[in-house]
Each structure stands twice: as structure tokens, then as C-alpha cells.
Image (cartoon, rainbow, N blue to C red; front, side):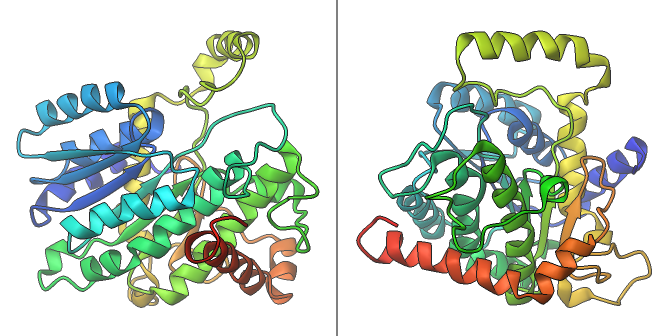
Length: 341
């Protein structure tokens, strides 16, 4: 575990970076997304933050709080249902029309559910779309702006980082992917969805790290944090989880600390992009077992998950390419084709 004092010291050092860093928080109106946005605003000069979510009232309240924390900050809210890939494209279009670079893309959009497959008008399960497809579409669409940030003429403004908060470890528990039904149209269960989303996040960021070697890509676990992830669950289930949270509170991470730690994971030098491989002794080992690979699988406390033999087996069998071929096919069908997969 990285000591909290070290986390805070690093985050404070971000004040030395050039003013005007741009960050996009997908799912930034509650929970870990909001707490990380708060730490980003607290520790940077004149930042420009985009909050993307569905709740206008919460966004207004949060924007006021962020401006109070840092009066030089600029906060924009984009109201969007990002379970739909075309909505993702609309949000990205708005950002690209206003910005020339994005320094940080931070994604937490998702929710807990006990329902079965809940298909959107685009032919994807809603939970699966939020946990995987929408996130990869954000990366795909904003990669030119992330690359521009990495190539900034000012070396103190070259931060370029993507962090997806989900569950890199979930794929380690089950390690079962149906490559003939990656979208789970035929074999959907909550467990299969969690496993596929986790493993596909892991391999997709490896793909992006190779495609965009000047950007860091992180898939991080949230840890035990009380958030609003149960908002779409039934009253009884929410009450049950709420009661369990009270019992487990001594073992859970404070939301503020979670934000501090996730900002650290997104910006710490040991999680350097692939282009900086072998330039420092303390670079972390990537999810593929390569030091400084640019694609990192982290626990909530920035400890690196070790490479698993089953992952090596899947990687040797072409899992990364198979998953990306499928993902790009989904994008073509929905965003460039008839609008449904």
C-alpha cells in the first residue's frame, strides 16, 4: 500500500504543473468520480473540469462546491445518458469543439443491479455498456485530445492519463470469457457481465497503451467505498446494502481518501506511459507483466496486481486482438451503421 502521506505529497505537487489542465469525469456527479474531481481541482492551477452524468441538480451543487475549493477553476456539466454510445459521441463532440487537449479522462459510470439483461435501443446490455463499451468509446473518441496533451510544447503540461474504475481483480476470480459471445447476447448473467467487463477492460487498455504510447492507461479497483451505485436497485435491496454498509464502515475507505488515492493512481510517475518505458527504476509492472508497459491494473491503494497464468494463456491466444476486433465492430455497427448491434 502507498502511504496516504505519500499520496497527498504527490497530489500537492501537481500545483507545480502548468495552469489550465483539462479533465473529463464520466460519472463525475457522485461517488468516486466526484471525490476525485474534487482532489483534482484542489491540487491544480486554473483547471477546466467536465462533469458528465445524468443528474443536473447534483451537477449544479457539485460545480458550486468545486468553484469554492478553487476559485480559478472552470466547471462544465454535460448531461448525458452514456449507456448509449451515440450519447457518448455527442458528449465527446461537445468537448472536442471547445478543447484542443484533454489531460485526464476519469471514468466511473455504472451501477449495481440484480436484473437480468437490460438491452438498450442500441442492442447492448445497459450495465455492460456503462462498464465497458461506453468507456472504451470515450477513450477512442478523445484519444486525439489526449495525444495533444502528451505532445504539449510546455513539458509541465504533458499530463495524459486515462483511468477506468471498475474491477481488474474480478477477472482473476472467475477467468472465464466466452469469445463467441463477448457481448453476452446469448449467455448474460450478472456474474458473466462482471467477468467480461473486467477482463475486457484489462485487455482493451493494453491495446490503447500500444496505440497511444504517450498516454497512461489504468484500470483500478474502487475498494470498499460507500457510493450511490445502488440508486437503481429496489427499496429492499438498497436498505439491505445500506445496513451492511453500516456494519462494514470500520473496514471501508473514506470517500475523500478514495478520491486522493485515485488521483494519485492517475498521475503518479511510476505509472508512466509506454513511451517512457525503461527511463526510471521505479516504474510499475503493467498488467501484461512488462515493467512500464503503460497499461496498469491496480488495487484501490495503488498496489499492482500480478500477472496471472490464465491471463498469459489468453494473451498468447490473441485475447487482446479478439476483444478489440469485437469492440471496434460494435462501434461500427452502432456509431457508423444502423445504430444497433
